[in-house]
Length: 276
Image (cartoon, rainbow, N blue to C red; front, top):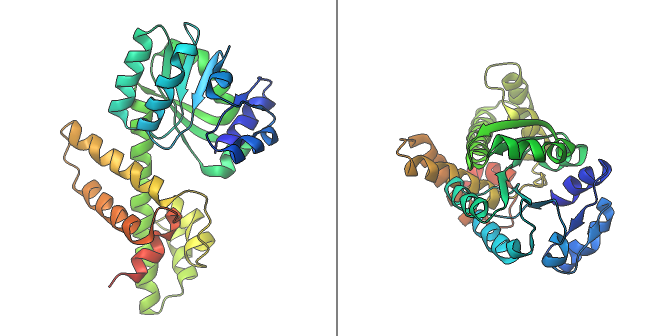
């Protein structure tokens, strides 16, 4: 996701410097129209804004704590990762107290929309800081939603992925049941898409990936399971009963344990049909 998003920022006329811990990723960064830095300190030097796009909030915190001393006062840090909302809020408060600016702005839409610059972006934090970040965010996204205080962007992203994952699991299960009964899976998908069962997965994942068993959507099952778990944990942290989220979390965690961390998230269909 990071490389095509950086390419969108570069096309908008910004000077973009990127860093990754993997040398191969750094070598490919020039394809995005930016400059690859040899160290993270070099990447953030003189930056007006620093974007993090990392696997989880713990890694974001470790990265930010490593480079924050190199940032000029007022530099905007934008965490576009899928991080835990409570951790994001704590990190943001620390950075703001240290004289920096911070917002969380995770994205939805996948690699295709990252390439097209049409991502949905959920921005949490102070409105004036989001105003400062808006031109950069709009270079990557078609819609920028202001979700509320610090951490709310990450909360919205996790909740979105929970709903998406529940819909994908239900749709894949329905196709498996229908197929066993003798209904052509493609016909059932057409029925769903013409009826009230339609969702993003019935439109964009079943015929494209699940039915032909081409598990190449580009989004990992481990990342999806993490986001669902984040949503479920948030519910428990703030005292909201979420029995369905509990069940969906358990389902995806079981699939992750069975299929392994390298599995694509659309392989949930394979997991569901293989269960006894």
